[in-house]
Length: 518
Picture 1 (cartoon, helix red, strand yellow):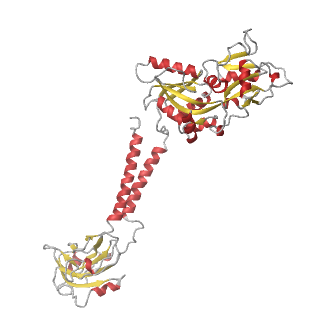
Picture 2 (picture 1 turned 180 degrees about the vertical axis):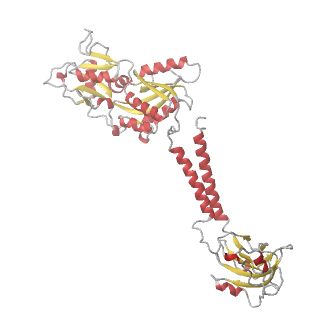
Picture 3 (picture 1 turned 45 degrees about the horizontal axis):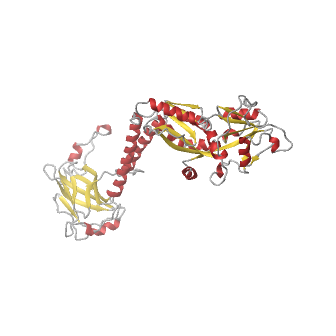
């Protein structure tokens, strides 16, 4: 698989990581914080008795800092604990949300096993930001008994972000002995939290926000490193190899421009354009296909109109609606011919332009394409309603057949027709619309007052138009250069180039209707 490259794998993994992190963050923010939660943490745990002196460090001058309660009876092993209890969830907490019964809200425990058990000597409750919380500690609440190892707290309602603190004087176990808070909260939890210390400023972003920002930043950097690299990866759908596009000379300018664009966009692809006429291209494709034991040869044949009879193995795709036009040497001051006048000229009934312009005496010279030309086939079918007369001239100026009614020559390409008409006085020929513009020495001719106008296709009765077909030998593999270039021709950039050259892409809404009608 061509897409399975290191760069693509990194891009996919990075994109998935970014999606997973973002999804996880949303889930966390939507699910976890919307619980009822009581968080607690110890903000201060320090020795105040003789042990404080034993554990102190030597200060300036060699003196030892000593505890302040050494002389107080029973406090030689005293410790002070400052405990913060807060609602750190997203929902308010009322008395009804405490489910332990009676007036029992939370229980604070100071150690469960000797020698780490500490016993309560005194307690102070404070709520500096929400003094009204203290009213939920009624006068009947006397706190714990002297020597108790736990404190039973009442059911204190807490709005989101509200907190209160307990300053507890303890004896017994050393500082750092476990302090835990227990209780049952309806649809909630009691947990240890890890907020900032009292002297710190709260962070601008939460921990989740910081982590998500870091991960997503890394994802963006990784993707940018892939995008901004020395070699830009080819567009999706590119294929490598060699391809020959043959057939219509009228459509060749479109294909040549697209071949250059494709080779530029898709490294490793070579597209050769060898246009020698629609019928010639169909025959070459059939010959190449017959030589191929299996599969489809790397050849596309373009034809002005459907292929001739036979060739059942060829698969067709409609590409565009092409407009064609008659062109006259500038020495003939005619810019409109009736359809019947054109037919009489090509039947040899009108041999001199003087028959149409009384002040002029100039023989008519018919400059045509050879039998391989799709442009000629369209002209015969759509305009003349019959085949052109036989070839009677080698130099397009003098007749080599004394029995011929007209002077008519055949040339191999559209370019040769255009240059010859521009050079020979009295010459008339035909061409694909785009090729008939911007050339000196000749001009386009309207038919029955109708001119070839791209925007009027489908509404105008202008007869000289045809569908451009692309043929392949059977169905080429989806990952082949043949299939890729055919898609490139019919869609995307191909549509813009086709329209620039004066054709209507079949893949556009209007083109679909007209191409479908044939």
